[in-house]
Image (cartoon, rainbow, N blue to C red; front, side, top):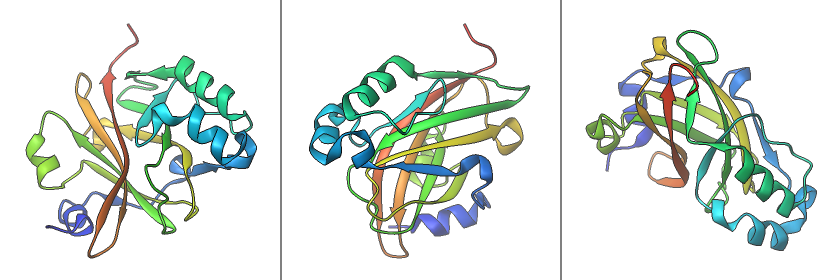
Length: 179
C-alpha cells in the first residue's frame, strides 16, 4: 500500500493550509451534546457535504441537521473566473486521533489517480484530535488543475507513514455559472 503522503509529495500537490482553508471543529456541547448530535446528524456520518455558505457553529443538533439539509448543494458555480469556494461540512466516521488531517480532492474523470492516491489538491488541516463535526472553507482554482463540468471526490483522511484512515468523503460538481 502506497503511503498517501508519498503520493501527494510525488505529484507536488501538498500546499500549506491557507487562511482560506482554516477549519472549525464544532463543539458537540454547542449543538446539543453527543447523543443528540449523533442522532440528529447521523445521516451525515462519514460524509462531506458542500454548503451554499459557511455552516453556523451555534445551533443545536436538530437545527444544525435541518440547516445542513436546507443549505446542501451538489454543484458549485465559480465565485470568480476560474475559482470556486467550497464550504465543507463533515461528520467524521471516527475521531481523527491526531492534530492534522489531510483534505484530498480527486478528479472523478481520472479514476486511476484515485486508485494511485494522487490527488489534484491536498491540504493539511489542523483539527482537534477528538473532533466529530468539522467545517472548513477552501478555495480551488483552474490554475491548481480544477475544471468546470468535472466532478471531484473530496476526502478527509487521517494518515501516518504506516496507515491511512478515511474519516469522511463526498463529491462536488464544478460549473462555470449557476443554473
